[in-house]
Image (cartoon, rainbow, N blue to C red; front, side, top):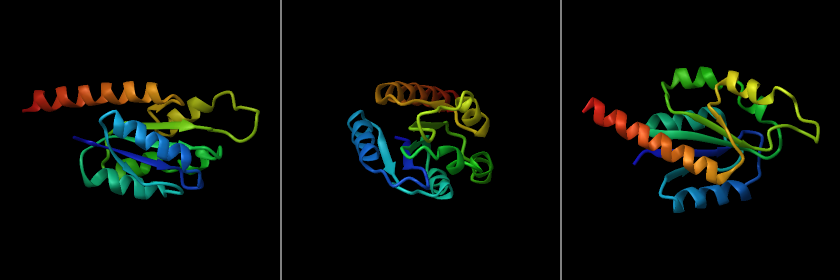
Length: 139
């Protein structure tokens, strides 16, 4: 089964939610490669390039995700990683939210933004089904 690479963004040391998400995904049947807290984006892509990857799931609790994902598109191209990029958590600092924040993340290379474990599970199941169908079509 393809791996899901899970990581907290580079400036984020919060691990409780990261560990809970790992357990949730593992118990949902996914093989999780959890890189933990304060993970450099390059490390995430190195791991994703090592073996077939269903998705990269990046989490941010400190609100600095915008800064932490700078260069995402370039790394995706450099490591020839074609899987979807998922981002979740607290995505901005303070109580005032930026109006076009999701649009900014999408233009930076994020494919799905979610804060719900169940929504993530459904999305990953859909990705798995599509990836399996594509493998069968190429066989």
